Length: 396
Image 1 (cartoon, rainbow, N blue to C red):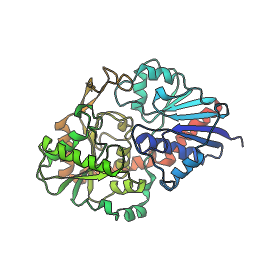
Image 2 (image 1 turned 60 degrees about the vertical axis):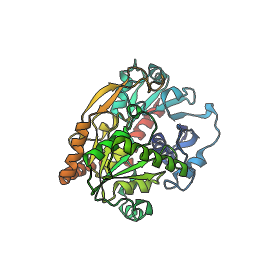
Image 3 (image 1 turned 135 degrees about the horizontal axis):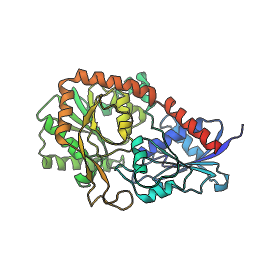
């Protein structure tokens, strides 16, 4: 067997969405007997790094072992999980760019030009592919390969054990609404996850409801004690500013979580609803994992998560497309005139109220969607798509 020397250049050790995506590709390549794998670990923004080799069933340790010096001329195929203007088309004999791109309706024409210098592009959603196509003359092939949900979601015996962890004891109200996002000091109109409005709208819809709680899995980007303090202080600051009452209670689940802990959170018996008033997603990994858990979902009806969410089976929030604000423009990722979704408050509140008042119907729909997710978005199913891509790369 002739083995191909493959370089994976990616933020492999970071606690980020791109980090998770990178580790999925690593696990697929690591399992292939026809690959000699070497990795180059990159930073991703201000996110923390995972440095315990035992994490994620030993994946972190395997990545560390594969991080070795290399010469460009020795690389047959490179996979580069980055933003397009960071790709290096000279790294290997054949170069594959992997990106979730940007969460607006267009991207920079510079990024399209960079795509045209690579041999193959991989994106996680049809939404992302269409963003590229409408942003300039795209000459290179673009393949849609989604991300898979956390396999730990299927390990029921491990989930039961993990649910006994002390950090979950704060979940006590019978109708707990889960949201995930990084708390930010950006102006509300600039926050892509729209987390402050999400908190406000859920709080207003369930004002003075003692059986409802809001659980926010969040941090400022790092899982430190100081970061937890900043998160707590930020929440205290915004509560009176938003006019929030004592109930529903707002609870904070802070810091980095192991994959089995995230899986246990989505399967907690008192977590009844996952909400996301997002303005845009390249893919939306927390949403696919909520769906794979059979958890009812309320989310904005636009962007990458429609790759796996069925509009008839989740609370699909109406929206208007709106130009990003001038303060968000950086002339790299976001340019003037780019648009993203502005979810409608009345529609969001209506959808969360539906789940609360007729939970059984919402749960049945969620369970139906779960079957499709578990069949078509598992690691086994997605790795087969990567296998087909690899055949194509070797042929080229």
